[in-house]
Length: 133
Image (cartoon, rainbow, N blue to C red; front, side, top):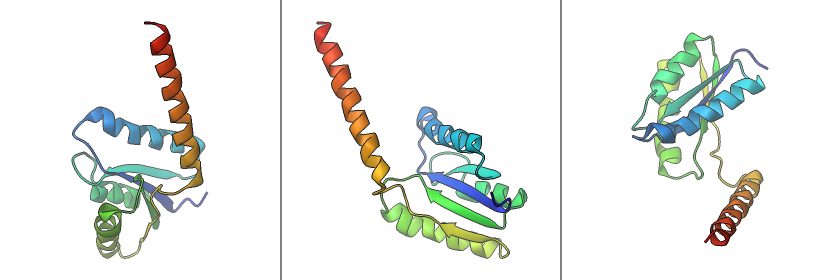
């Protein structure tokens, strides 16, 4: 663990707190793993904390390197344009801190396993519903 590296997990954000709770669940799980001393959540829009707020929190906690991980499935406009712009703005705002924009979840092979598992759960739930009729 590099004590000066922080992780900033960035989700889109929603007006519905229960949707944002998924991001905080991921943050809690990562913190339990203990791989990074500083792990913060941020939202691109519609929710708090903002990217700027959470990046500032990382810096205040001593980070000199911040890995910005998009909690997005694809590298669309938000990742390629919006998050890249945030990364550049933060680098200017905090000149002694290296901000690095990681790849979104995208085509990671483990996502195929998750999708297959969810499909299996859906089939089981449907079969359970049809047998109770």
